[in-house]
Image 1 (cartoon, rainbow, N blue to C red):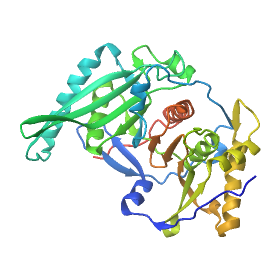
Image 2: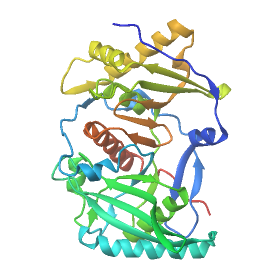
Image 3: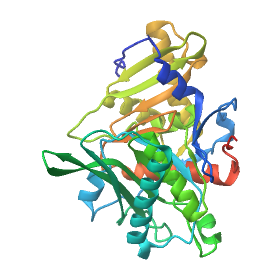
Length: 358
């Protein structure tokens, strides 16, 4: 194996980054209360509680809506978890568009949001389907939401997208989906891009309209390790994006980053991984321990005492606070099924993810 090319970079975290790593996330209470940022003392899920093995996706999705999917790429999304929607209907998307537009306008007026000179604050929401963004016939079709406002400049209206988001379920738990009453639609993943104030309003509207629960979706260090291993050998022939991993050092508020050439990462993974159909937890642990050993040999730092907070590959980048960026349509089948699995795990085994404050 070639010597891994690496880069060590330590720097103090900004206050915003520190808060983002410490918090569980924004919880949308099914009331008129504002979203509350909660903190958790819950320990990270140990490896022994994660699945012993995971199958490798063979979905190759999607193919027929390349233009729509392109909108999802290269954006910084914030992940949220959504419980099943009650009485959601794909035939009523136009009605939902009008209702959300009215709700946002009402909330802005109620909360007295600032009005800038020359800007029309009337927001327009639009719901549409992301056809084909699913792995099986049991998965509900994905839904895209876009919110725009009109800016008046020299008596001409310029429409601007201020928020976008999408709900999806890719390769969802078949047993869970089949056990749901027909009145429920399961779209457990919400991706949001835009101001948190708008995300909060959209989340509150979803809860009020579909009697669901929306909560932040942090990603544990262990699941980030799975992502690094599963995506190590997935890279485009035209774009060789460097694999980057970032760890935090809690006692001194530092970050440590490691950059690896994609071909080196692939060679390391190929030397460990054996089965073409599944990945085992032992392989993930060996992959990460190999990187730890490499780093210790070069810099004398034991990464086992730190916490993995970010993974970036040619496929996607993911942060422990729930931030995600998708880089390529080619490997969506390696990202979305895994995130869907994590969402189903939260739904079934952690029903009370957060609570509202009075």
